[in-house]
Amino acid sequence: MKTLQIVYTFLDPYLVYASDDAAYYKKTLLIDNIWRLKIIGAIGSLINLLLLILYFMADGLAGLTTIEGLLRIAWILASILYIVGVDAPQRASDIRLRQRLFFYCATGLSLLFASLITAVLSIEQGSTFLYLINVLLIGSFLYLSALEMLFVISPSLIVLILAMVITPTSILRVQGNSINVFASIAFAVVIAQTILTAKLKQLENTRTILQQKAQLEQQIDLDGLTHIPNRRMLASYQPDASVPLVMLMIDIDFFKYYNDTYGHLQGDQCLIAVAQRLADDPGASLALRYGGEEFLLILRPTAPPNLAATIDSIRQGIADLKIPHEASLFGIVTVSIGYVVCTEAIFPTAGTSFDPSPAIKKADQALYQAKAEGRNRICRFEE
Image (cartoon, rainbow, N blue to C red):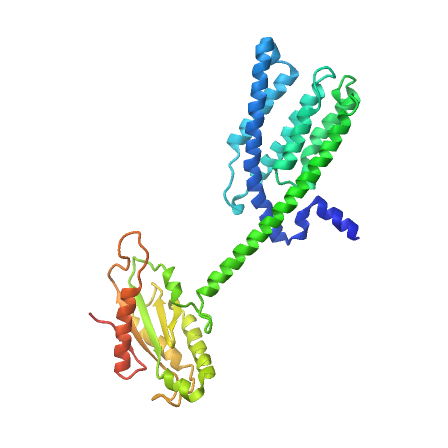
C-alpha cells in the first residue's frame, strides 16, 4: 500500500495537498507555464524560420514545399497563434478553462510537430535530435507532473511508434535512435517531476511565510489585552471623505479607583468587557483601545440623523453591563464621551492619507468637558 502511495505521489505530487491548496498551486504554476511556453514557442519559431530560410536559399520554393518544410511553417503559425492569442493572467483567480486547454494543446502540439518532422526524415536525412531536444526542453523548463508530461507526450509518441513500425526508411529504425527516444522521455518525466516537486515546496514555504506575516501584522495592530485594534490601526484607516467624520473619545469613569478597589486582574476584565461592547456596537466603523482606560470610536457614515441620541445609546450600553463599581458615584462602571463632527475636509490635500490628529484633539477636549461636568455623560466639541 505504501509503495502504491509513493507511485501515486510520483505521478501527481498535488495529491499530498488539500484540494483547495492543490487548486491554488496548479493555477499559480499555470501562470508561469503560460509565460514559459511562450518563450519556448518564440525560440522554436526563430529556429524554424532560420532553417526555412536556409532551405529556401538552397532549393528555392521547393525547399519550403517539402513535407518537412510545410510542417515547420505550420509549427511557426501555431506558435504565433499561441503567443499572441493566449493571454497570461496575473493572478491564480483569473485562470480560465480556455487558458488551460490552450496551454496543454500547445505543449502537446509542439512535441507532435517535432515527432512528425522526425517521422518523415529518412535514415539519410537526419536523426532524432529535434524530438529529443523538445522533450527534454519541455520537461526541464515547464512545471509539469509526470501525468501531465505523459499526457502531452502521448500523441507524439504514438506518431513515432507508427513511423517505426510502418516506414522501413524511418530514422527510428537506426540502432540506438528508438532507445534514445524512450530514454529521453523517461529522463524528461523524471526531470519534470523533480522540478515540479521542488517548485511546489517553494510555493508552500512562501505561502506559509506570507500567512505568518499577515497574522503577525494583524497581531501588531491588535491590543494584547482586549483583542480590539490599538491606535496603530489609525495609520491605515481611510474614512469616507465625502461625509462628515464623527469621532468619539471614551473614558471609563473613576477607573483608577476601580483598580484600587478590585485589583488589576479584575480591572483587566472590566476593560475587556467595555472594549467588546464598543466593538460590537452596530454604529461603529472603527473601535480601538487608545491607551489605558481610554477608547476611540469612529461612527459609520450611515449614522442616524439624531446623532446625540445615537452616541448616548453607546454610553448607556456600557452602563447596561451593570459592572459593579463601589468607588464610583454611580455604583456601576460608566463612561464619559467627548465627540466631534468634522464637516470640513478631513484630508489635508488631495491624494494624501487621513490625519486623525486634529479630530482626536477636539474629541479629547470634549471628553475633558464631559468629565468636568460630572462624568457619565456625552459632550460635543464646539468651536
